[in-house]
Image 1 (cartoon, rainbow, N blue to C red):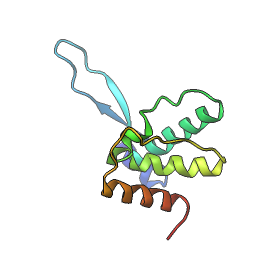
Image 2: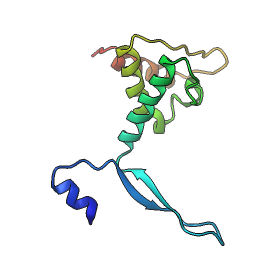
Image 3: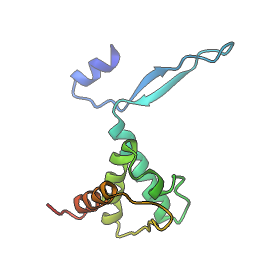
Length: 118
């Protein structure tokens, strides 16, 4: 296929076509999706940082609501690197949430990785 040929030439393919099943009675539509979710996470993190620098809304769920969702883990890794690189900060408020012991360990791991702890 065309994408395989580009990859074999050493080109990086970020997007690939994706056909979603159409709703009953609707025409099929072609969509694009990232070839690897790490690309999506990286670009979303970059967009969020750009909005943060411009003091615009980030358009994300609350950090505290998705921190333990594995689908968001890679995104937060990229975002925390960008926060540090741009000398920014953000706040998290866990007063209204129960933080179980395994969640506390996750927090320590996440922020330990971010700060470069062993």
